[in-house]
Amino acid sequence: DIVEKPSPEKSPSNLGCMGVYIFKPVIFDAIRKTKPGVKNEYQLTDSIKILIDEGYKVFYRRIEGKHIDVGTIEDFKKANLFFSKVCNE
Image 1 (cartoon, rainbow, N blue to C red):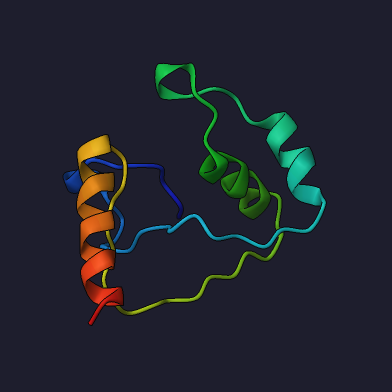
Image 2: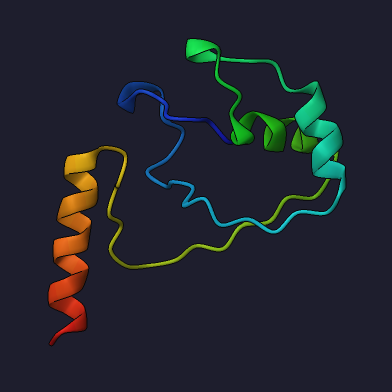
């Protein structure tokens, strides 16, 4: 299953989507069928779920390594600081 920002107790796994996708044009049909969710926002994960439910094959690749959330300005600043240190080593 693919779930957008589940609560920890409802999370089906400890994996996350990193927002790097390759789609065939059928994704646009799924997007048109997608209904707004929390805060009246449309989530791409809901469109992917539609494809799965309609029998399309959806693949993923598990990637090991560090994940840095940049969902807030403060997180973005921390990520920039982290990468500036890593890139200058």
